[in-house]
Figure 1 (cartoon, one colour):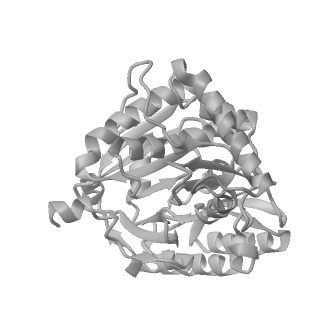
Figure 2 (tube, helix red, strand yellow):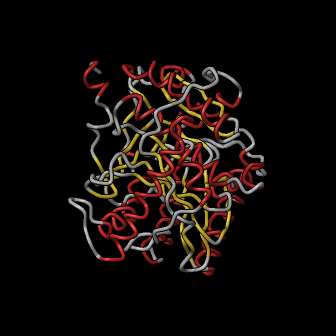
Figure 3 (spheres, one colour):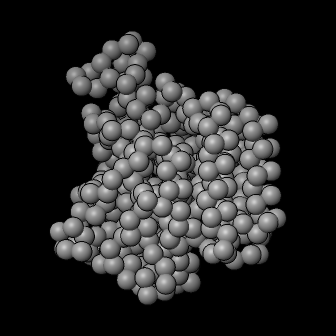
Length: 390
C-alpha cells in the first residue's frame, strides 16, 4: 500500500448504511501495518462509577478521542468510545502527535477529574505479528457522520497489552493540558421511554464458533429492530435541552485553570442562548436549535462493533428478556461471553467542533455504569474470548 493510500485509508473506505452490515466481512478492510492504535481507559472505573462519578468517567473516555483528533487536526479517523475509555487508530504521520496527546490527556484526567487514565500506543505491525488483524468498516449514520467498526481481534489484543503495561505512554508533566476544544457534556441524563436503558457487550468464544457468533449478532440486531427507532435511546426530535451541574463542572475543566471561570461563563451564556432560541422558535444565522437537536439524535453511536457487539439501547421488558435469552443460550453453547447492565437513563458526551456544522458526534452510554458495568459482569465468565472477524 502506498504512503498516500495508507494515510487516507479511512476516508477512502466504502460506507454501509444498515447496521446489519457489521456482520458482513465484505465491509471490512485491514488497517495498514504502519498505523498505530492509541488506546486508553480508566483504572478502577467500576469503583468510580459506584461512587457516582459516571459523568467524569465518560468525560475522561471521550477526552481521549477529542485530544487526539484535535492534535492531528483530523476528525475523520477510526475511533471507538468505550464508556470508560477509547481507542483511536492513527496514521504514521500522526503517531508522534497522538503520543503527546495521550500523555497530556493523562495529566488532565488525573489533575482535573481525579481519575487515573492509563494509555498505550500499539503499532499495528505488532498486532499482525501476533497473528491478528485490525479490520475496519465505516458505518454511515447519516451523510455527515460515520463511525468506525472494528473486527479481527487487533483492538482487543491492544487493549489487553495496555492493561499489562506494554506499549505504555507515560503521563505528561504536571500542568500539561491537551486541546479539548469541542468536548462537551451539556445534556441531562436521557430517560428511558420504553422500559430500560440496556448496555450490552457480547464477544465470541473460539474460532470454530465465529459463524455462529455472526448469526447471533444478526439475530440480536433483528430483534432490537422491532423496537421504536431500533432501540435508539434518543427520541427522533432529539434530547431535552438541559445542563447539569456535574456536566457544567466537567466541561469547565477542559479549559486551562487560568481560563476556567471565563469558560464557565461562556458555556452558561451559550446554553441560555440556545434555550431561548429553542423556546421562541428562532434561529441565529445558520444555527437552528431544532435542527441541531434532531442532528444530535441522528449522530449518536448507540450501537457499534468493536471485536464484539456493543449496544446501549432503550427496550421494553419483554424485548430485554428475549435478548437476554438469546445471549444466555449462546453462552451456554460456548458461542459467546456477554455482559448486560440495566438502568433507567442514558448519558451523552459530545464532540462539537462547531454547532454551525452538522458533523458533531455524540457518544452514548448507560447513565449508571453502562459498558463498564456490563464488562465487569462479563468477566465473571471464565472462557477465553476470540474477537470476531465478521
